[in-house]
Image (cartoon, rainbow, N blue to C red):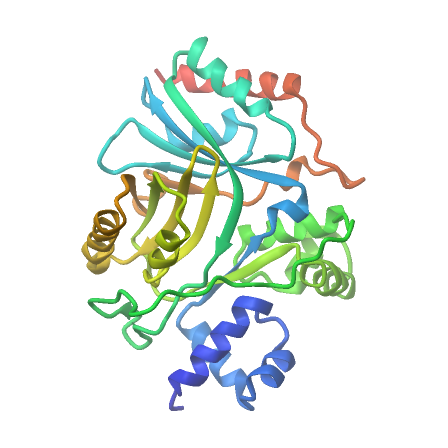
Length: 352
């Protein structure tokens, strides 16, 4: 079939808001009668659809942490040393001892700080670290305006002419609290991109109808996710950008990078941006960031994390649903975290 790029882009936009489980909804909202053909086309291109959780609604706070290592560690070590709370563990390809941790932790609790202190002061694994708490975030879909769907590559000179708008989903201020099924369902979908309702039902031990009820009534209906990220094609690296500014106009201009996915406003007057990319557009991205810093007079740090070799520079994980209890609470104590950290530390030190 001949693919109409405008229809394809419209369908991708809807998937970013609703996922692609409900074909009839996509058909109704897009006005495209043969939506199934476009979904099949995307699946042939190995599309990956992953939820972006609304951390505040789930009772979690996002912390961005920059670590200077004293000794060499495998990235996955941090996952176990910090009890599974990091969702991103990233090593810079240029500065070998620089590691970035994206940590999700129950709101109002700070026990992971004591773990980092122990790794610095007692174990000697960390030379120093800085933690920045997110107070506001904007989520952006990957823009495929300058993307070749046949070659699965972005065009050269792919910086957009105009800034983009973040994805605004309906946000509720009610007192709804997610249950265990809701939180685990989101985590499972992050772990197994494109998991079917049948696969999720089997993993949770409930019926497919129950999965659908939780998904549509709670996960979607109660705004437990910000958006769905739609990945098409192969990506070669992830970029962490820390800007020493909180100017909204800077953040807005930054959205002209089509593969910018998230902007986090951090305490200590910083903006953290997450960008992914393909090798041939890396120079475009870095040059654009550099020009922005000149035009708006700010300094920045940029870290590049190749996605391959596997787990050498980048480790990602789902939200830490294993710490969410059946009665709907985030449960973790400092004592438990310390005990688990010390057990993991023994295995780390054995390798030396």
